[in-house]
Image (cartoon, rainbow, N blue to C red):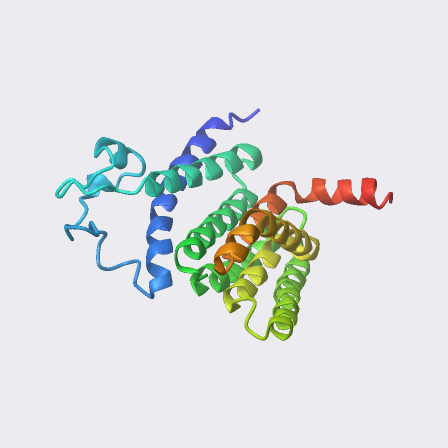
Length: 256
């Protein structure tokens, strides 16, 4: 039996690095900025962040959450995102081992977290996450567990199409745009990873979570619902437990 821990630890370390990069992407892509240049700098004093302070999680801890130069606070979001991505990559490596499915799932869940961060802060889902993620999803499909390339294409088409219909119905009903184009492209990306049934479950879970969590806030404040956040959570749940949920629904609710 192969010891899973070396692969798990390596994947976790790699995830920490990608988590650090995800922080940059989620901040710069919605503002149409390059993730390559200029180098990361403190937003308060403008001083470039030293390489040793950029070590995921550890750098933030050693700095005690403050800039080395001006002592401005550094958001705890940065180490939390790095740690989350690291744990996701490690967990998938432990579950699937050194396989393409580990990489596919890690990329998918990392993209979903990036979308949630971008939509929460800017109400924008960058094409780099949605369109780029869809391309990667289709490329991974031939090596996916339980998903064929054809099912991936159908999933992408249905993901975009269903949300487009919802957006058109909302526009007719409310006389204004009810959903952004980023959500549509995001669901095409999700469909490329989870297929048609996964798309339907993702939309159901996203709508349910959005209505329960953000619905009352939106009614009171008239703020737009950052639907991408809830779709991202729904897609993550679908990837992890979608087959169990669908199987339970078909067997228990439909009695089939």
